[in-house]
Image 1 (cartoon, rainbow, N blue to C red):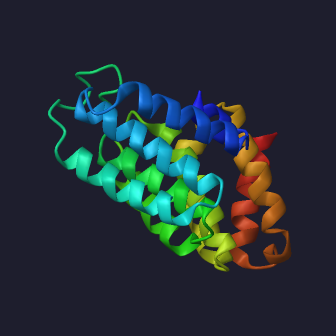
Image 2: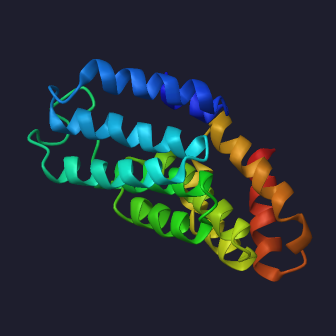
Length: 192
């Protein structure tokens, strides 16, 4: 529920839910699950602009994931792997306004995704493009979108389309640049 609350911008609720989950679990669950919940707490703290706690929780999440005792995919949230932490870190840094740092983490998350994770890779890639654009690099944002062409072509997702629409609005001042114009044309075609 904390993930969903954060996704729709209910940051205070996301923080309360993430903290409640961490409190209920304590340190007694499998380390991979504890790490996932700690990462969600970090993201929620970033959402309310609590920079210090968000960064401290990200460091704790990384340490917990390093010591995870269950192999990935063994538990119901066993999918929490390094690339998921990279994505969560990117989301937290985006909320904190560190767009260059966020883009680095999104790239790291995308580059290690498995071939079957097309939708996830596309979503993270679009978030990476937003980070580049908000950091002032419209050409890199466009290049990121163009690199996702294959993944985006096979996806029908309201969330992906929402990200594409938002990206098209944000790079409007840069549409005269060749890469941006090409990426914008691709996005427009995908949204039809």
